[in-house]
Length: 364
Image 1 (tube, one colour):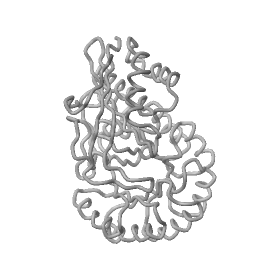
Image 2 (tube, helix red, strand yellow):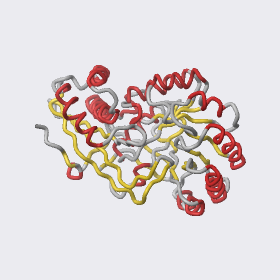
Image 3 (cartoon, one colour):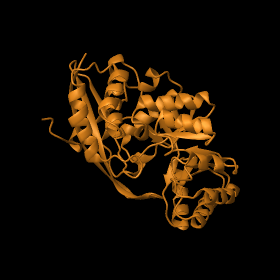
Image 4 (tube, helix red, strand yellow):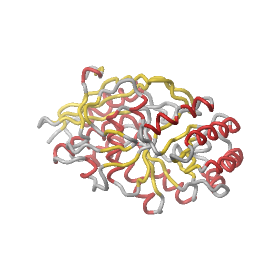
């Protein structure tokens, strides 16, 4: 079996309302769809959700990476040899995780379809459903608190609260949200690198009274000594996110004792293979993982959901991005109801794409 063609296109997704984190505000996701076709008629789908604020890649760069570098390299390759193809991609592109994850995602979708099973079963299988949280972006405390009740009514029992713009205002934000929750849901905090080291310690200590479950990436990424300093001085578990892009990063965090938890994102890891390696390293060290997402459609979210459902060490999920979008090009895929994400039982990712909603680029 050979790869017959690789196509890629623009997928621009407008949000229902602006989404603000400590690093900036997003009102539209400029993503990339990849379609891989084999000579036996199988079609696999992948998505990149580049976020310059976090991963450093962007839509045009991902498209060029796929079409100018990866497509010529991979035409004629056996699509079942995903590890071989992943290694080839690393040799021709440094960085650009979006291009590589979109291609690898489409290849795994093909594998599941070729062998007739959902990906989470293909990877070993742990469960076909799990709880996901929902994120409240940074705003005034009363506005953030006003979003709690509708989410609880939808069934969410874990809410992720974005902080990191101003520590004193952050305390007010968390107090307002905690008051609205009134013990009916878990509170997870994500500072997206927004605090300084000593500021983070003081702020987290002050927030402990709100029964916070965890704090994610409190300081600038890569400051492993600072993360360790914080972790040793607070009672709330610390989760590494932007500090862990690769398995090598995960190993550094584990060796330093810098985090209690690790957040895996496909778009950071640059592929499902690397994401699974991060989870395996963490499991070996006794560290549980969360799987999160960028601002992506149900395509990439479904791939992440299959990863969650395949591993007993991934105990938390933050796969809420499709809920922020005005429209979604996906038919089928993972479905979230009542705060519970359920996997499809169809082969591969278990979805199709409305091709008319993708602006494919010329292959020539």
